[in-house]
Length: 390
Image (tube, rainbow, N blue to C red):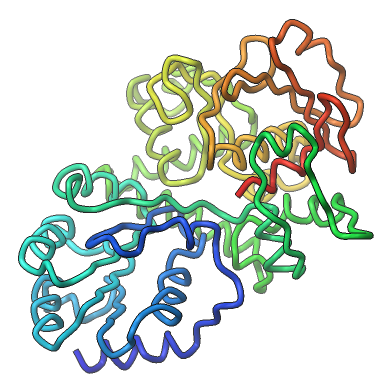
């Protein structure tokens, strides 16, 4: 316990609070138990440490990571018991899915220690979702954190602070930019290297590829109880997607290429989506996270597109990937029968500077979203503006 406390105190001392992720103020930290989930590398740990440093009494708070050697010989519930007896009030557990039977232990902590507030996080959305459904659905509130918006990127890396805009603000051109600010240069930098908070660290591309490898080789197989050969098939599937996105899936053809049934392909796609590596665009029978037919498959964010496709990255795909990635935080996005996307009855066609209007002519309310323009007019909206919505 003493070593855990010492490690925690050092982490708090080294934590800076000059920038908060968009979710920081949306979380109801007063919940007795809450989870923060999301892909690897999006800043869950930093957000928890910032909250501890700014809002809590360090003497009655403890942060631990579940992959610490301490848990090779101790149970989480035993740690909670000891901590509560010492007067602890707030327990933060990072990477919790690495503990066996973690959801059962959290349930016991919740039931045995009503005086203790617990915050947990996990890099694998799959494990967290599975455990929450099984034991914690009535106890834990779960928040999903995704990578940086373009607005957050500007604040974190360029010290430019812009307000969060609603979709209506964007469509009605209520955009106020700092004097002299030219959005396109930083926007295109963001598309290549700006989605993850560690973007300025050395060897960003290699670190991003390492995240992909670990997600495919460790996180998903651990959740789905796959063997090594199945993990290789996940990598094959992602390679197929990254080479032809936006990818229109033919389950039978993919199944033949991978040597698995078409039903397994659908499961694999869902696993990879929940792990934060792809996004599946569905029709109006279920929405982006629902049960509708999958019409297109995208990589999750534009940094993944450039990391996997390199100089062969298709700019049209990059634009659509950015749009769906940024807008899904606050909206349900479905495929449009006449254009690219449909959000709340509004039709969106995404393209470059020369994109025409014929695909939205029959839409009740249609918009053309153009890259490579600084300002919009009427129903023409600059692509970068959708990066200001969270």
